[in-house]
Length: 296
Image: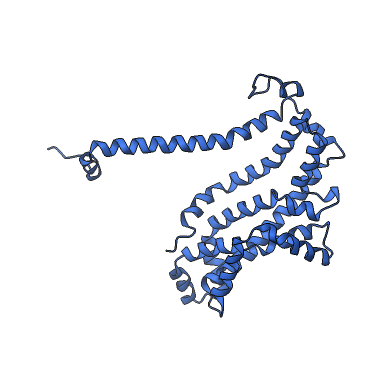
C-alpha cells in the first residue's frame, strides 16, 4: 500500500510559475546585498576605530593599511587614563551616573503618563496629548535658551541636576509608550478588573510585564541619547571634574590634534558601554518593533 507524501504546501509551490521563483530569488539577492552594504558602512568605521586605538604611532601614518596592527599596544589607553588634565575615568563615571538616572526617571514618568493617555478618560485628554505631539515638530535648539534661563534661575548650573532636569520632560517617550499600550488588547485589563484588580494593580501586574519589549527599546534610545549628549552638558557644566564623556573628549581632541591613536582610544571608551548595553537588550527590540504602533 502506497501513501501520497506530497504536502498541500509543496503542491501549491509546484503549481506556481517558474518566473515567480526567479523573481523571488532575485529580490532576496538584491535585499541581502543592500543590507550587507549598509551593515559594512556602519561596521567598517567601528572596526577601524577599534584597530587604530591599539596601533603604535608609526603605524598610524603608514602608507599601508593594517586592519590588524603589527604591534598591539595599550599605550594610547595608558596615556589617556594617566593624564591628569584629561580625567577620562571621572568623565566616564559622570556619564554613567547621568545616563542611568536619566533613563530610569524618564521610563518611570513616560510609562505612567502614556498609560493615562492610552486608557484613562479625563477632560481635555486628546487636546493635551495633541499639544504635546506638536512640540515634536519643533527643533530641539529652540528650547536651549529657555532651559538655560530656567536652570540659571534655579541655580543649578555646573551640577548633574541641571543636566538632567530638562530631559525629564521629554515628549517622545510618552508618545512611544502610548502607542505600545494601545496595541495591548483591552480585554486583558477588563478581565483583571472583573477579578477585582484596581487600576494600579492592572497597570503594574498586567500592562507593565507585557510592555518589557517596548520599555527595553525605549531604555536603549534614552540611554544612547543621554550618553551621546554633547551640546546641553557643555553649556551647563563648567568644572572639568563634572564633565561627561562627550564634552570631555572635546578637550582631548583640542589637546592632541594629531594624536589619532588617543582620539580612537577615547572613542572606543565611549562606544563600548553602549554596545554592551545593546547586546543585553537587543532581543527585546525586534518584539517591540513588531508590535509598537499596531493597534490590535
